[in-house]
Image 1: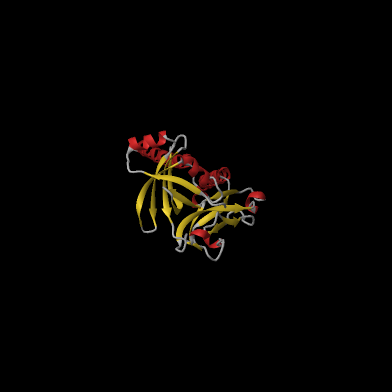
Image 2: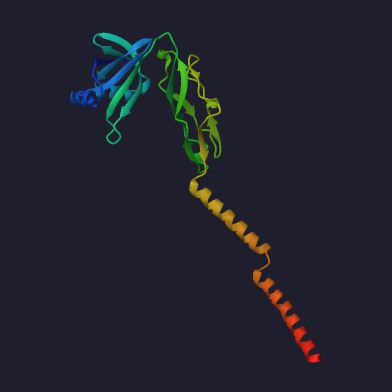
Length: 236
C-alpha cells in the first residue's frame, strides 16, 4: 500500500463546545498516545480516517500522523461513530515502534461454499469474525483466510484449524474457539422437535388406561354393593 500521511493539528481545548467548533470546521477530535510518550490531543479530517477504514487493511493500516510537521507512525486504535448517520465523531491513534510486537485484531475471510450448504441443505453460521494476533507492525496481515469448502452439515472449524498468514504472526485467540459451523435450518429443527413431541404424546396415550374405563369399574362395584344391601333388607 502506498505511504499514507494524515494531517493533524494539536489542540488544547476540550469539551462539547470545543468539539462542536471542530466539527464546524470539518474536523473531529482525537488522541495520540503510545511509544512511551505523553498523550497529545489532536484534530483530524474525518474523510482521511474514512479512507483508511475503507482500505484493504482497514483499521490495521499503518500510516503517518503529521502533527505540526512532526510525523509519527501510528495505527488507528479506536473510533466512534454517530449511531444514526454513522458519521465519525472521534478517533484514537496509537504510536507504534516498528521493532516491537503489538497485538491487534484481524478480520477472518471465509473461502469456498461448504458441502453442508451446497449439498446437504445446511446454513453457514459465521460466529467469530476477528482473531487476535501478535506481530511486528509491518507484518500485520490484511486478513486471515479460512477454507470452509469441505465443511459438512453439523461440523465446525475452530481457531486450531487456522493457519497463520506467516511464521511472523502469532495467533492469540484460544484454539478451542469456534469460528464457523454448518447448522440445520431453524425451521427444520422446529418441525423435528414438534414431530418428536407428537410421537411422545401418542405413545403416552396408548400406554395409559382410559379414565372412563376406571370410572366404569368403580361405578360397577358400587352398584353391586348397593344391590347387596337391598337384598339383605328384603330377607329381613
